[in-house]
Length: 451
Image: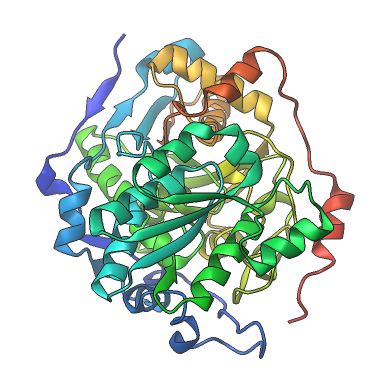
């Protein structure tokens, strides 16, 4: 039984991004200045971000045009295919229908170029010459490196040290695109040196890497900072995924009952879910949204909704999000892209409004689900993507137990070709589950800012 593929023509590539903020029943809480605790202004963000991206960050317009030069580059791999996973359905013996959107066809092998390309474009259009950023597993770093090479920008990437050591091929990919990749924490910034002084063996975190990248941008007028998840404009750019999916589900003469996405910062989850949620909020069909995160970094399921810094050194504005505390340093599990201490404010807000659900799953179940999927569908998923697969399989098994024929859609956000050491360790029995202890979460949350 072969999978069924739903393909769109180049002309079907969206000409506009969808902005969920236009349809929310309650507006997002404001972003606050870290010093005054007052709502920030666009001028406060100008040292870090391109002006066009700041405008998108605060926009409440429903549709925002995609510049034609950006669309021309996205057409290199978009529109991406949607598959009906018939072989997986058979392997699970489920009455559910399972579909997955395959984002691993991009040059870097994940969904991240969907936002890397426009961010590089807008910075280049404003005369910026250098970009600094952070990366966890390396998908974002390699995507931005690729986008910077297209637009002739220098790219400096601070990569979380545990992933820097685990994933040398991701580093090689960034360097091939011309980027400079540095293990974080490093001795190249004040914030990195402070961390290393207190803990010379620190394995790093996305919060630390963000601090280093932000510090570089703030101190150099020719440099701006780019982020691969969390912020509103990043989630906006990723909606090309869900907008394409809506057209492809029409081709399949079907509609999802539940949409599943893995969540670290929230970008790929928002990308596939928000267009469907917007349709629901405007009076369209109902759909359940399920965010799946690692039990070792349970931001949505155990982190409170609170104002917090996006980085460890407290250089960023304060945003209201589900957080484990900016000082949180997660265990070195293999899903490096899901190890961020906070969740996108928009994703957090949607959960708080009761418009979505969240679930934490241990890494052994996720890897087992990834292997099951690979054997059935022939694609080896990135460790991050196995969380979405595990969530989809749980939903398919629920349908089997309840005798329900539901339609399940999930985002397969990237391939695992640079993550084979993780699979080697899994097959060798070296991986262990890790539930982050509540007492350690409490310690990390003790430093939340007073707002």
